[in-house]
Image 1: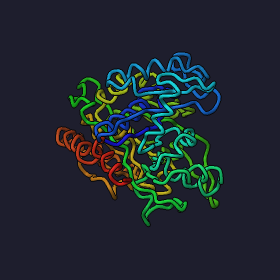
Image 2: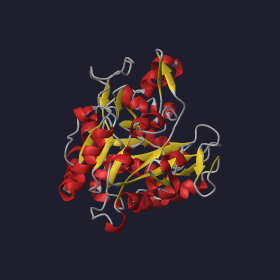
Image 3: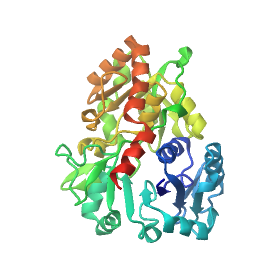
Amino acid sequence: MIRAVLATHMVRYPLGGNLSWALQYILGLQRAGADLTIVERADYPNACFDPLANQLTDDPASGLQIVRDLLARHGLADRFVFVDHSGRYHGLDGPTVHQRFADADCFIDSGNHGAWSEPASQIPCRVLIDGEPGYTQIRCVTEPARKAMIDQYNFHFSNGLLLDTEHTAAPPTGHRWRPFVNPVCPDLFEHVPPPPDDAHWSTIMNWQAHKPLEYQGKVYGQKDLSFERFKSLPQSIHAAMELAVSGQAPRDELAAMGWRIADAKAKTRTVDGYYQYIRESLGEFSVAKHVFVEARTGWFSDRSAAYLASGRPVILQDTGFSEVLPTGEGLFAVNNIDEAREAIESVQSDYSRHSHAAREVARECLDAGKAFADLLASVK
């Protein structure tokens, strides 16, 4: 059994979608046979989002309770530590954590990049999993400190499934970026019919997660830019379309164009609420971050994986993932309004077939246990 330490991101942002993403990684590693220790730390001030107070803080109490309860449901509460900004350990104590690092065969950093560099430095296998393809590579070649951090790992994986191919426009960094699709544990998601009295398409999105990035004269943005080409979609289809959105979105303008608007934080306050929101939908229509699309990274969403596992068809702006994942039944890659409309009409004409196909894509292509078994086998 491989002894693995996983650095993740839960206490600092304990909302349902983020916790679900982290949980797929945790359970995937466990199902792949890893003897797992889960670590997280606040490596800068006010790193913790308190969902009750709706503010950033140094106090991790709210997030800690949420994460402890979630891990306890899966028998993993005694495998976790959070180190707050003052250096206090919550969960596993300092000596135990240091020993786990000393004994580990593999360190996997999926969400606390660089925060555990010192204790991880003696572990022979150090894996970085990048969730921001294109953005990370541009920063790596323009920011020496970022490259120095990435150089500390001896294996580099990314949710950008095309990064190590000739199809991407992301700059080379001198690393081999191996593909690692955001995985999912299908058995965590119920496959039940959507409620017939409120049949709608939905997604959950942050309008602008960070500032635009400029590289070689080109500006790479966020979902705000990607959404422009699909903004009028509700006006061209016979389907209800809902956006659960956070950030500075033009809500009134979107509502005037036919979008139903919901509060993303309210809809995803808990993991169970996040799963319920997905089940209440016909499926997902969503865009991808502008940088993912324009750099043709092949990124595929953990949120879309959750929709698929729930038997909810996904229509997602193509980032190049269509070159890797099967599309046309249950999962559609689209580039414009016409393609999105055709995909929605196709699904609604034979919903049962596409619903079952969506579930099969999750099972066959995105299974977390298999994904991490393959990853661990490739870094031996």
